[in-house]
Image (cartoon, rainbow, N blue to C red):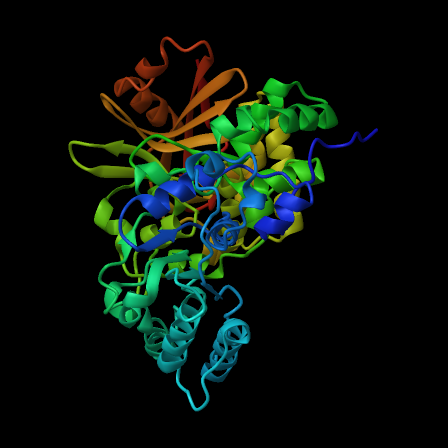
Length: 531
């Protein structure tokens, strides 16, 4: 029996006024907005993955600069901005999120609509044509309506470019168009009070912002780590009644529900400071649907990501725990051959750790939603299996390993599944086999790590199952070879002292040795499972 939720949940609602006047759930981000506006410098840029609250952030800033104090009753910024009346600024809001045409003619029509919405408010000077003159004229006309400086808010500045990023010739033409579109933001500086741009990626400065050299990128600034997304403090504080309600709907305790929400949707980190946030779209949709599912990942197929991984011959296990410098996050999206910056910018990888001495960031997959979604998207390219075949295997494998704790039965299922992979997709070396196994384990929802470093070496695979930690060594045996064997794999686990890090664990630890045969194109049936 469904019960009434504590709030209305704003799935797809990104207008601040509507959220505040119609009783929708709102996580107060206005203290971040206050700090952003008053931190010094008038030109700011923030990147976050898609559906991470950027549009709502822009809408909230628009309402603030329009002096809509009534909408901020009880929020942090009401306490921070103590002026009796808030000044009303002319706001030029340019929403490029719908500019996704792949043709120059289509892009021209979309940009015309974007400017037309603002020109309907501030007027359009006769005889003005061209993107740069129109934008400059728009700002100048807006400036004549008030003695307060003009505020320019650009939402999803990079949307027109992302759609053609893998077409170099078209991308170059689109960059020239967008450079002309944005160039007046520097020329109009005397009229501007504040400029804020959001996007997913950072196209190199020379691409479209060559003149805008005063644009400050706050994307990795620790004080703005929680400006988009839901923090743990927000979930445990203002959203605690929603968690308790959802727990009741799902037949869980509040603690169990909180842990499942964390496992599915938490884990995003955008700064060197260890402050993680939940995916707001997935979290709010889970409340609205009364169910835990892959909402963010399912809302967009990362075709560009799949193509980039395949063209760079990169596997997901190689991306777990990869270390990068800060400059890697600013790598230009255009012409990108390395998938790491793109995967971070688009939310498929996130910061897991930071070494202040080396200034090195460790990246990894944020949570179960992304891990399972990536695995389901990529596994057809590794196996050639249909969704129905894969689903049936996943259910059987999961029941055996995660529910039954029966590694032997799980390996029998794995052996059968791998044997059915077409010859041209079968693993050609240990790396390919490890990649296939990693995707399978992630797909079933297992907590899996690969290439785990210890004081004495590396462990190929560690699987955390209920009550048991499986330490697994993988071997690849070429045709006409007698070795290695699964016994060799177990001996290597013992020889490297791989179990030492788990000696004090409350969980049972089991060693597993598995050999993939090049001839059979699957694992041998004499695997070793030892205590």
